[in-house]
Amino acid sequence: VVDCTLPGFRAPTARFGGRLDLRRSTIGGDGQHALELVHADIAGALRLDGARLIAPGRMAVDAGGLVMRGGVFCEDGFVAEGEVSFPGAELPGGLWMRGARITVGSPDAFAFQGDMLKASTVRLSRGFTTDGRIRLRSVRIEDLLTFDDAELLGSGTSLMCVGMQAGALDLRFRYRPAGGVNLRTAHADRIQDHPSTWPTTLGLDGLTYGWLGDTAPSRREDVENRLAWLRHQPVYVPQPYEQLASHYRRCGHEDEARRVLLVRERSRRATLGPAGRAWGWLLDSTVGYGYRPWIAGIWLALLTLIGSLVFAGHNPVANT
Image 1 (cartoon, rainbow, N blue to C red):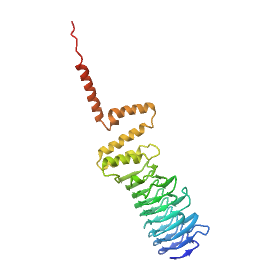
Image 2: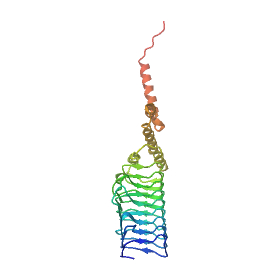
Image 3: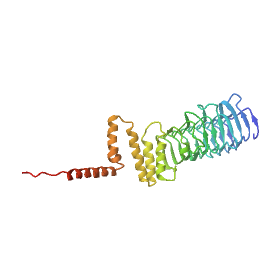
Image 4: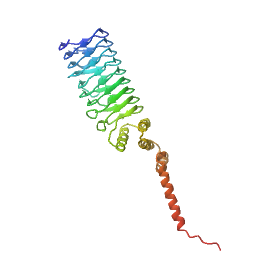
């Protein structure tokens, strides 16, 4: 079915002994979903390179529960007019959508859904573009989940990866996403990103990582960038600060870790009542919340100097 025009391709629960090749084909929805492979089993690869799947307001690809032996390839000019959906799919050969374009006609609509997806890699990168939202809750990606050079135009939450598990996560988008990025309770062994494309709103509570890419040549600039990164959260939560400090400590950067924990306490102080803020200000001014103990030494030296000056100017009067 290469280079064909079809009114639709619907094969739910079907079993394919080899690959399914739909390269450069145009598949219409005909009032329904364009490509339906719900709970299908494909022994080889699914080739959709250069294909056009047209189902406005419906699903261009409905592949919930799809089981693959090979990869899913949607590259070389692949276009989907309608939602692309792979919830619960098993893709040991990966999902390759470099340069693909998904249009759903509304920034509030979901363009790609892959909740509970399991794959070796997911490449929504190198010019991947969508005008809707992406949802990847609780996915399990063995190697790389990448949005490198991707353009995400969905509003609200452009990218939701709550509970995601990945070997590596690349968030170096082409432009800043139109909406927020939610990474709550996610984990990646490695994360690469860039300050120029950080979204306005970030959900970082519960996010853990083994390694975090540098944002600047100097450690001082990097830690200030990362503190700005944490301020993209809508509300203060302590865990992202503790995770960042742990990262710096693993890298042997104790000063940067202490800086992060100090800012954590200052951010917490802003959430307290007047009495709590006053007490926090006192702790900050005297000992830097314990992360700058040398401040106490300065206060001690200053008080000693003042006492010495006071007593030096005092002339005792002899008793008669």
